[in-house]
Image: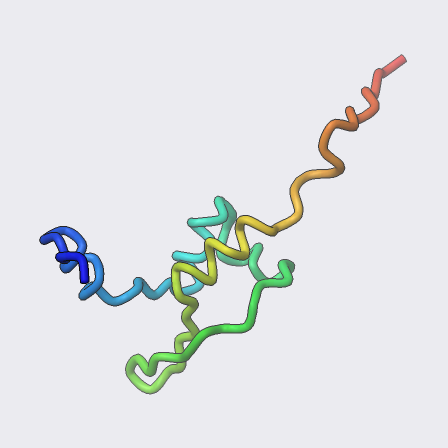
Length: 85
């Protein structure tokens, strides 16, 4: 069995980061209210904070969504220019 290096041990022991709605929006580069219009993945869990439920997603879930998220139009097809006459 190969030896585990010091940096690997720290990385393996660290839990994955939770992203709340504001964090998820920041990762995508949009405002928090914009997430209401997106078809985001189901939450990975819920934390209770002073009696209120706070949905969260794991960082890996958010990054996977960002990677497969549709972009702005079809790639390689230029948008028609609008000229004022």
